[in-house]
Length: 427
Ligand SMILES: Cc1ncc(COP(=O)(O)O)c(C=O)c1O
Image (cartoon, rainbow, N blue to C red; front, side):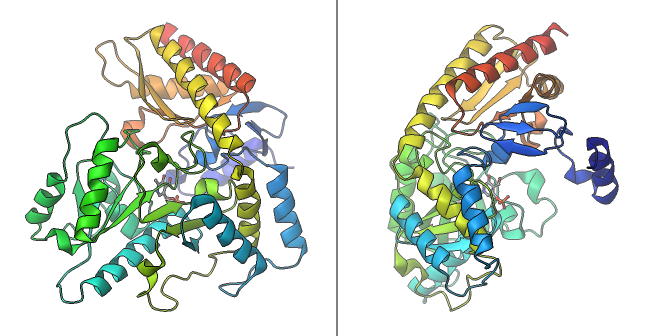
């Protein structure tokens, strides 16, 4: 079999350098909360393959479902009806309480689908009005890497390549927890581009922002809900990364008690193969979408659906999510202890269940990306797989273990993390 060195060299040669953003650990296989190299080395995983393997890597239930679907002899079916498709959309509605869903392949595709549904709905509701398609989103938000999703995002560095549509995608300050915020900021931003509240087709946001780990304020979330209902705009929560137990609830919006009209899910939906969905609160929202306008070649691929169906069953009785909440507390307590050992050089950016962000800081409290990067390397050296996203200038180490990580594995991971930080800070 090819060596790790061969893999790295071949990828370096046949892929652009921009693709190689993570530490060069060559994954051979993964199981539960661990990732393994070909030579038997292993890491406790704090990435979940970027928030996907929530229920653990390589779950036997999911592998069996994929295998038996493949053996049934149906690898692809386009938009034709299949049994696995019917069972999965029913399971998704039964679990989430949303009436219907539209299936896609990636998160960004679900974002684009939700923008289209909102725009079609607004156009139908307000036929007499001139421009009912303004999309309101928040600074610091991330919604994916296709054109619409990047324009919707609020990370300037990620949209500076794209054509400017600043009067369609209106970006306003994020209603972060414990910060003064009111829906006036939306109306002000609309005035600046010559639009009115009734021109808005949707407001899309994250319950916690993947890029900054700021969390939405419950009171602001409620006023956002009221503002959307008052003006006939759909409220969309992008839970592509926060869904399926990640925050200690099935969906993160449960923390704020505000229900969106459309809920976007992906990553943890199958915990493995690419599949995403727009969950729809009211079938009326799609009544005016023309036939075929939401379809896609691989949406509802039978193999991905088999994985999703098996994975959804793991969440059905609520025990996995309840356990995730307990592990999240253990993670938060462990990180608080870690900070208290050297508060002038360590910072918690945010925690919510089994997601956390930490950073190294200089003595004066400013972020120290070089040390955070060294910390990641020291963790990996000690058998703890971590990931440093490019957002926040590469200063934040993002912690996102499978939510099924055992108490012992999490304790061991925290010990390795602390030892790695000590090594960095000893110089
Ligand atoms: C909140 C959020 N929205 C959308 C996306 C895009 O998903 P995908 O990479 O599957 O297109 C991501 C991916 O990280 C995300 O975190």
